[in-house]
Amino acid sequence: MKITVPATSANLGPGFDTLGIAVGIKNQVIIKPSKFHSVSLRGEGSNNPVLKDNNMFLAIFNDFYNNLSTKKRFFRFEFINEIPLSRGLGSSSAVIVSAIASAYAIEGIKLSKEKLLNLALAYESHPDNITPAVMGGFNVATVQDNEVKYIKKEIPKHLVAVVVVPNRPISTQLSRKTLPYKYSKDDAIFNLSHGSLLTAAFMTENWEMLKIASQDKFHQSYRMKQMPELFEVQKMALKSGALMSTLSGSGSTLFSIAYRNDAKKIETVLKEKFPHFKVFTTHFDNTGVKIEY
Ligand SMILES: Nc1ncnc2c1ncn2[C@@H]1O[C@H](COP(=O)(O)OP(=O)(O)OP(=O)(O)O)[C@@H](O)[C@H]1O
Ligand SMILES: N[C@@H](CCO)C(=O)O
Image 1 (cartoon, helix red, strand yellow):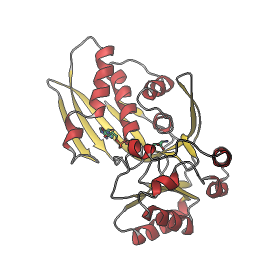
Image 2 (cartoon, rainbow, N blue to C red; image 1 turned 90 degrees about the horizontal axis):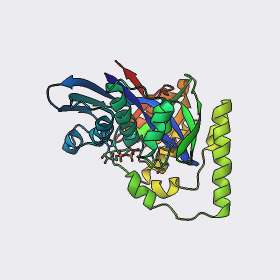
Image 3 (spheres, rainbow, N blue to C red; image 1 turned 180 degrees about the vertical axis):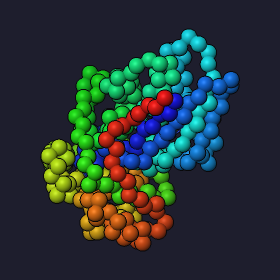
């Protein structure tokens, strides 16, 4: 059995804890029944021994599997990770979603995507990474009575993401602590209006509106000050033709959206200017987590 789950970019500027989008890089887990427990790990995180043994995937998988099954079975877990850790591309959300989906699937128990999403919510207080990780596409999500309420929009193929991944992480947990506890009425209205405009721009495919709509006063500047070079990346991406350029989740990745025809030029400029960062272009994922037997 193979589970595939996409990376996700949350906030998209003003949509703090609300807007998120799934992109073409992914984590895959191949699970096979085995005589004994074994784990292999390739790609992102493979040089981190902690991730091999007591990683979050196995902890969540076992929590659910032990409740779903009466049988004591062993498995071989083969992790193939493309999503970098602590770079704002939803690595932990991908793990949470794929671990829960795997436990149900290995037992042959059907699990709707809505139910999966609400089970994942228990592990992540904000829905803006887990929702696109489950559903794919662009999502607007909120939590009401412990349930995620969301609306999804698929992204057309002529749009791509140009992603700049710095060589230093920003921890979501720590960076949330650097944010103000209170905001002024003006800043609240600024983010409400820009987040609403951004959502409408995605839903109506008004891509030229993304640049104005993706401005933020809640979190980006506080976080980007931890790595001031990110302001340069953002300016260069927009100058080279990006439709929008925002901090991906809590960072450190800078996430830009562009027309497919403009991506090569943007990517080339960013690679030349920031050779110490990983720069790549990827399509959008409109499927979300998927299981193949
Ligand atoms: N691929 C993974 N495999 C196992 N555990 C993981 C993986 N990714 C994240 N984790 C666990 O989740 C914790 C938080 O990781 P990380 O900071 O990447 O998540 P995050 O908050 O989603 O940030 P980001 O969105 O930047 O990835 C890690 O310390 C690790 O315990
Ligand atoms: N909305 C979350 C996203 C984390 O990926 C944050 O900004 O902390």
